[in-house]
Length: 152
Ligand SMILES: [Ca+2]
Image 1: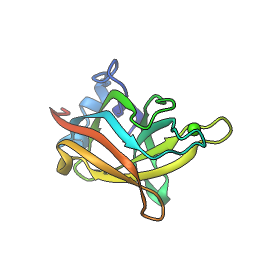
Image 2 (image 1 turned 60 degrees about the horizontal axis):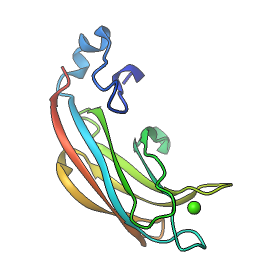
Image 3 (image 1 turned 120 degrees about the vertical axis):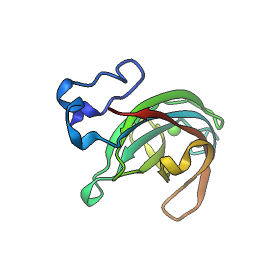
């Protein structure tokens, strides 16, 4: 998929060039809106707080995830409220996405965990568990997935 087919944020969400629109390969692709709502996360800093942000991406070849969007950092809170949305096009061949949670730090951000979602199967609002590499929960995030219709 060319980068022009990916729209991030809300402002340029439906800006697609003509070449993409005429490309038959995009038939059966659909727009989805993903809204990062709130979270309840574990403390990551010695202060007992966390500076949590999320990012969503599409797993690529050899684990090279193509990141589509990163939320703002919600500083010093265990109950972050992002209220951020992104629209992008989901191919019927690749519906698995990954959401990661990170704790922003001064020197190096700390990985908290991730959750994998199949976007069409996750239609609606979900409280998703963020699990670290050992499978331990680092909290939950509330995310909604809304089908916004055919791409072309
Ligand atoms: Ca931090």
